[in-house]
Amino acid sequence: EKGKLQSLPDKETLDEVSYKMVFVGMPFLTIMLVTGSVWAEYAWGRFWSWDPKETFALVTWLVYALYLHIRLMRGWKGKRTAILSIVGFAAILFTFFGVSYLLPGLHSYIQ
Image (cartoon, rainbow, N blue to C red; front, side, top):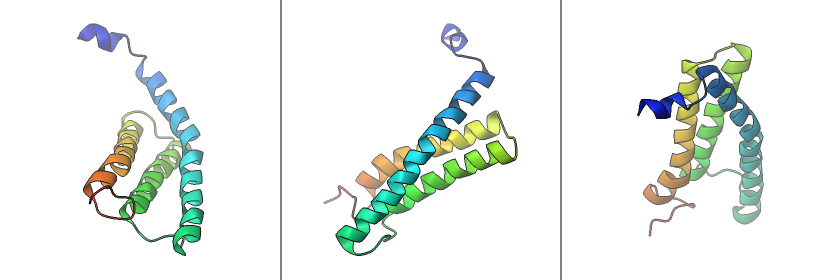
């Protein structure tokens, strides 16, 4: 078991990779929210309806925006930003799976 952990990069490298991944992914999250809103206006006549999928997508965007803000403006690194990154990833998973299968709404698979 210890051998597997030793094969991981050091904490600083993992922190930097995490930051770069969020930095690259954030524009895609932004584009997703904007284009989804434009499509919703075309399809349903309103940009935002506070559907659970929309709401949790916004929560995900806000978590990663906070991550980038405190990383760039406050200089936070290490454990605190790692926790935020994990919270953001959990939000993505819940937005994709949890909302789709557990909560009713326009984007739900519940019958």
